[in-house]
Length: 473
Image (cartoon, rainbow, N blue to C red; front, side, top):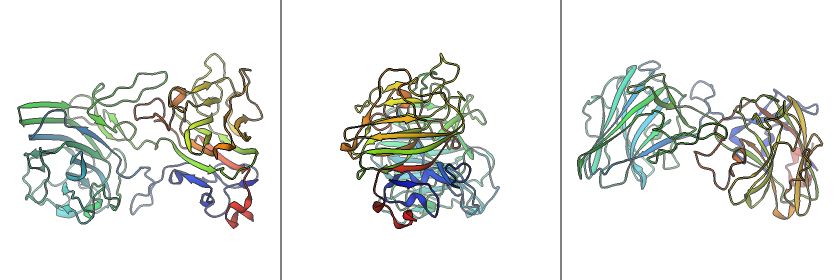
């Protein structure tokens, strides 16, 4: 057996531990077995120059395909600036509003809203190019000084190029982007499209400068074509106009076929609107399915044991999810999981339970059993995953199969399995499969809370010779 207790320096650096390490942290809030540390899901980003944590993945964005035929015309977007000239000189972005070639996103023209000091504090037009360095960053001295309130970005499109201005102020013609002879697409990004002018977000070389949520609101997207024929289309952020995720017990999902990527990263709000009652803004929600994996390819028959602390217990707010998964090492869609989240199931009982899930590797609904384990309780729980040559099964606090419906089994050692700890529900609440079928409108994976689950004292049936020497002490 190899025991990982998350003590010492860099405890997640063991070579058999993989996955989304960026989204997990060592903490002293809870610990088991007399140790000091445990781990929990976390989504860190350090705001430049401050040390403050702003959880955000680089270059998060949503897009609109142009909904009408447009060889020439205009696209306008209203945005609300919450900070104006406050903090001029800070290296922080709020939003980039981008018109791009959908077939070559590196070819774009954009307006970036940030706290940079150039030109006394303005909204900066930028241009992407097809090579990594450099790009065009226009200080736009003829454009408006930043100010709190609503402003309008205007893209003017001809068959061969597109240009941009803010509030109608003419630019110096320094930046331009794809014309109507391309497949145009509008992108809203909570980051710098050009890495501060040194590259492009698509190049893999751009620095990321994401800002805090709620700095900018966007509303009233208007497409006006003059050729090949006069036509127009308008999108606000009202209910029934933007993508919305479904919920197991709530409303069905809604799909705006011209929109992609809005769900999770951004949200609708009534805080500021230019038209209607809702606008859109960066929301900074947890990254879905962030997980750690433990490679068990060298495992021998035996048991995985681990401790998990549940901070919510019988709570049924239905907003926090976590999964402990044993999966096929070459096909993560084939798994057995113990899911620990604050849903109301089984609703017929006074206290809801923990859930046992057997996936459908093809991606359809999973086998979901809400009576398999005992009641949810705040505190530390012991998990045992028994591994045999051909199958696995999971016990929680020594119990399983409490409804006498039969043992649920998963992949065995013949699949070179992995243990996965996930911040989310691997089965989408029993309706799907996180690896095989999930898209942004799927059920129930978009909410989470970072303080829900803590993990400690993971014992694995692998040789201690397969881990770094520090683990032997």
